[in-house]
Image 1 (cartoon, rainbow, N blue to C red):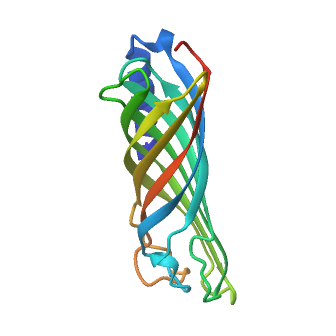
Image 2: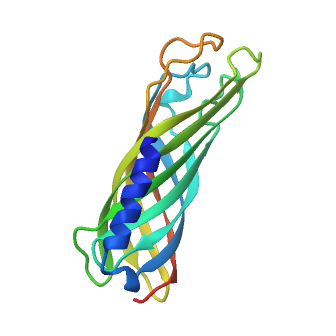
Length: 200
């Protein structure tokens, strides 16, 4: 059983046991942000590791009226290994996570939270000479913290900082590599929250 599957089972168990399920709030939350302090074991022909990269994505989930919630999140990082050097033709990283959201306290409008989750990171790189082309899916863990601010009606805003790290993986002998492949990065993002059902 994979780590992501175990995390999903734990999250579902917690939800089923929560007495606040009848008063739950379902939401969607598109976001945008940037990465920082990235490190990688993938071959970085363009030297893009030190650059901040745009990230866009969306989360959907459930937040109880007490302290517990869950969410599923997909983040896209286009051109992650690409820079002005021009040796990389195209690249993209897609990160999909399932997260447990914990809110230790809240006010009528403001709710700080922390998240912990597991998922996968799909790394795709194509260089101009087609020598170091790479496609890899690695298990990943994430942790983060942020704040949610309720606005009028069903809308709100949230911003957070999250750290994502994949497993170290030795590539197959047929794939060009300088060592174990991995990816770790910090993401700073913010966006709109739309509550789609539940009581206030």
